[in-house]
Image (cartoon, rainbow, N blue to C red; front, side, top):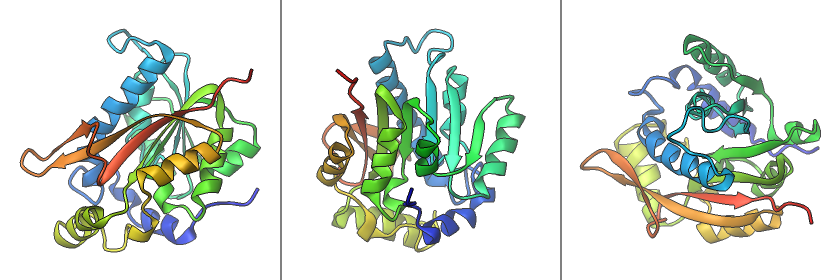
Length: 247
């Protein structure tokens, strides 16, 4: 199967691999965003699978793939909630960082240096695919999302987040985060690869999934925190889609 991996994009993240768990390092934006992402992810999974988030191990019995897992910022919370987690990344240096941290935390997570296409070709199937801040870094978004669809069991859901493409996102994600705040090295993001919500919905639908929901993730520079928004999808946003059961 043809890969959708962009080697130049992989190299960017390999160069930063050692800093995944440093909340003041190059991944500071993700550490700040993570509570907001987790609020959305856990609510969507709980609603789709009828789970009580207040109960012990609410995701027990669910198999979750965190594709583009990086250092495991989302894989670890999923494992703590009881899910059986596979964390996959195309950047080889990310995997040992994630493995060591999970071991230190006493968590069992199956981390793999692999791609969505290879997992799909191997027949791997999951109840949930977490596809967070990855699609804007691949060479072929349609092929990549199609591989993610193949990785889902019938009735499974994919949660996918990315960045909108408009002047505001250029100001926030490129000029603000990379040039002014210097949270990320210049060139981490390519604004031309950002995807509008309507474009993503079209790609998701063509991949064979049914869009269910989308929300914005909005940063407040006063409180230095993120919140979900039903209306403001101008910069960061997240979607949920389902692989319909076979009739």
